[in-house]
Image (cartoon, rainbow, N blue to C red; front, side, top):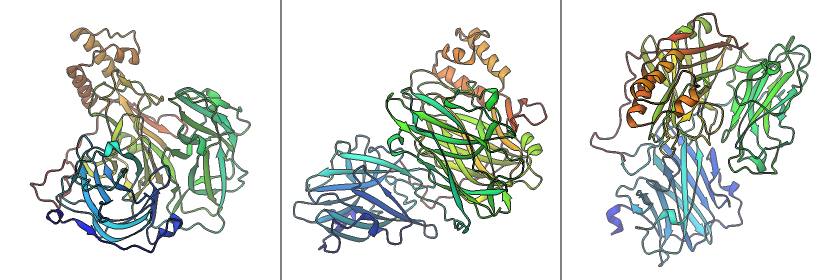
Length: 586
């Protein structure tokens, strides 16, 4: 019967590997690896072949021979509607390697199309080594389609030696997930020059407050830098004891401080900065939960030091502590790699998307609701250099309702290839990702950042803001050569929003009022499907209020309220699929 499913039946006598051998000895030619489970029993190695659109995987497992396991993928880490490859041994001692899927209840089914190709396998006692490959797109509706966004790798371990695995409930087994960018771009990272040195900016043994959201501020200084140098890489340094509490970290350079900066070490403001810290606004390093190191391309680095360069910086750590845990002491921060030999270009960081403001909101009970932030051509035309800039890395950012984020690139009404996209975005995994190739942005180009949010489990409206329970929609892009444009973000025009609240009061009899603030007005509305649709229409049609901001915090000259939306006249064509037209994906 199993032959009808084209299954790989493995009849093996294994002798090579023993459980005492450390996992590191199995890396071979695989460039990437990840430990899947908390007890370090399942190690996932992989590599990517873009020429043949294949991902090559090696699983090294210490699952006992009296148990069986599966590893695979799902949209957001669920064990339901998942795509698993399963290794199991029946009561006769026969080994099986099978492509499977789970339904909405987590029940396991054998896939009629076996798309995981086993290449090698060995086992002895409690050690199993499996090497296999799979195409990015298999044209099988039960398989997960791999892309270059976030991939949720799921796994389970179940006890026993079953006669058949069909009908087993994966959700009842020991299971979990890890997040990774599986299809990493093929980029040749620049080698460190011999003169590289490092420094760290760390939180000074902060006693993390037992409250949901804390922005901790700490002012300190850079090492003495009499000459210009370039940051060429940075990475998070996260305390193991507080890794589940540190949501993101930013290091701000304090512009133009020639004397002393007031010392600060304590909880900061959720929004804005006091006047004495207003100069600390240029981001020189950032980390978010799940992120790895960010390396600059060999032609660019972030400039620090030299004549007139202020030594003062502000470290901001966002702690997310929804369980109000007490007694955690944190010294997390960022490590910088610096070269005294300057590179060709100075790099910069530009914020795209929506303003941090409660003018935006998400109605409750929405499967998906789009929030859209604009960087309009009227801003790039006056703020970017004549030859434009090249964006080489991107960090998409939302809070807890974000499900997908992407940034569109528009030139003269024509939509160009997207800057970055993550269709399975997770707020718990916000990497700064190098782009496969730098994207050239010219003056008069527009960039549109779209966040698709889900509030189906929320009973109340979600407004924009800094708290983790509020929402953001941002893309932090890294580029060169550095310009004076630091923020290019939008919000709905204030007059249009006030008109919406007035309409809701007059026509829908909602207790909204011009005397109330935006948060109170949003909370005064009964979010019926009709009212949710009206808000969506408001955002899709209303003019914009723009933040087209210089690095000193001031707006570029011009009138930035009531600005028109960017219209796409020629959309980007859909990429042709290699699958038959009749093929339907789940």
